[in-house]
Amino acid sequence: MSTLFESLDLNGLNLANRVVMAPMTRCRADAEHQPTALMAEYYGQRAGAGLIITEGVSPSPNGLGYTRIPGLFTAQHVAGWRPVTEAVHARGGRIFVQLMHTGRASVQVNMPAGARVLAPSAITLDGEMWTDAAGLQPYTTPQAMSAEEILAACAEFADSAALAVEAGFDGVELHAANGYLIEQFLNTASNQRTDEWGGSVENRARFALETARAVAARIGAAKVGIRLSPYGAFNSMQADADTDALYSLLARELGALGLAYVHVVDHSSMGAPAVPQEIKDVIRRNFGGVVILSGGYDLARAQAELAADKGELVAFGRPFLANPDLVRRLREGLELAQPDFDSFYTPGEKGYTDYPALA
Image (cartoon, rainbow, N blue to C red):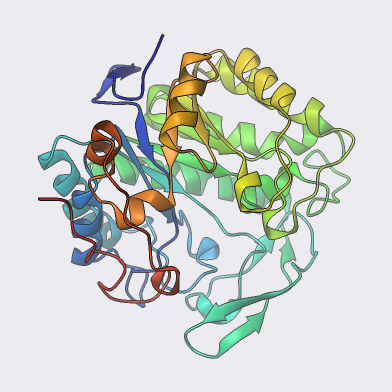
C-alpha cells in the first residue's frame, strides 16, 4: 500500500515523495515572456515536492495568449530557465516544465509581433481575457490551422522539449487539458474539421498523439508526461457522446509510447463537471503506467486514493501557493496557510514569494 510520503522511481528519476506541485499559471514572467529571478525563488522555495510541474510555458510565439506567461523557444529563454532548475535541484527537488500552447484561448494584443492566434477551427472562444495593454478584451477569433501549420506546431513542441532538457528540466508535461491547443483538437466544441485532424475520435486524437510521439522521439519517452481533463469545461470545452471512447483510445496509444505518466485532472471541486470514476479507471488501465491524480485533494483523500491504487502520485495546487513547505506541513499535520486570491496573477513578490515557511 503506497503512502504520500514514500519515494517513487519515475522511469529512473527518483522522487523523494509522492506529492506533486500542480502546474498553476502565475503571470510573473516579464513583458517579453522571459523567466525571472523571482520565478527561480518561487520554485526553489517549493522544492520539497516530490515533483514540481511548472506553470504553462509556451513552446511557440503563437502560444503566448496570456499576459506575462513564460516562453521556451529561444536561447534567451533557456538561459532564463536555468536558474529555476538549478534552484530546485540544489534543494533536492525534481521539476518538469509544462508545455502549453494557448491556441484560441488568446488575445492578439498579449502576443509578440508576428505571432498569430491559431486553432483547429475558426471558432471564437466566448468571454474576455485580461491584457496589461488594454484591460479586459474579448478573445481573438483564431485562424484555422492548415495541415502544414499543424505539423509545424508538433515540431515546435519537440523543439521546446529539447530546449527544456538544455535548460536543466527533468522532463516535460504536455498540456492536453483545460481547453488549450492540444485539447482543442480533442474536443468537438473547438474542432469541427473534416480532414484527418477532425471528426472521428481517431482523427481528433491525432494531434495529441503526433505531438507526444515527436516529443518522445526528441528527448525520450521517459521524460514526457501528459495532462488530460476528460469532461472538463474550462475554456468552453464540452463532453460529447464519444468522450469516453476518445480518452480510452488516447490512453491506450499514450501507454504504447511508454510516457512517464498521465496526469488526470478533475476540477469538480472548483465547480466543473465531475470526471466519472469509470473513465478514470479506463485511462489508468489502458495507459498502464504512472498516474498523477489532481483536483481538490487534501491529505486524507490523497492517502485514501493512493491506498486504493487509483494512482501513484497526487498533485496539490492552491495549497502550494501559500505553503512553500507544504510537504512538511502535511507530514506533520500542521495548519495550512490560506492563499490571497487577489494576487494570483499580479506582478511582483506579493502573494508569490512572500509566504513564509514554518520555522
